[in-house]
Length: 182
Image 1 (cartoon, rainbow, N blue to C red):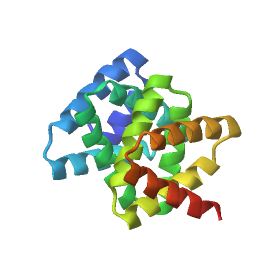
Image 2: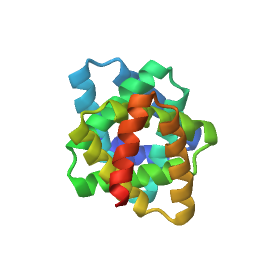
Image 3: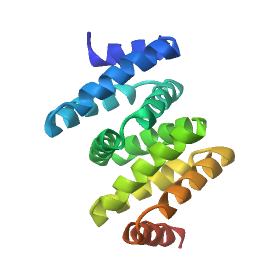
Image 4: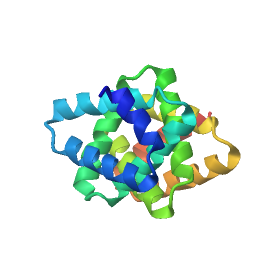
């Protein structure tokens, strides 16, 4: 079965079954060597990216909930791979994917939202400046596509996550955020 077929089938599974299948995928990804994990996860992201936005959000919401339940080191590995794959996408595709992600997270449970956002922001702060800036600019564009309630929720989550970073990480993120405001 083609990965696109698998992804489409996941959308239509009941939530509990979707969680079982997606948890197995996440655990499988986490156990792969770095390069193999990157390729496999990129293929999955590309397949998810072919879905209508509502279906993308469904899968991203389930995945986010599952990520929040994983051990921190596993979550950091998977989120780091996600970020690496996002950086390789064309800007418009990256923004579309990030928009769906933010919409899904805006409606996720508080714990899942906070945990996944913290993992993303922590990894973002570790990136080289050029990559961090590019991803933050895409994040800003994605946030701009949200309805006000979603945007406020996500900005609050992001600011909370930034406030929990070590001083150096907090500084680099805040400096870039400030530069995007002018």
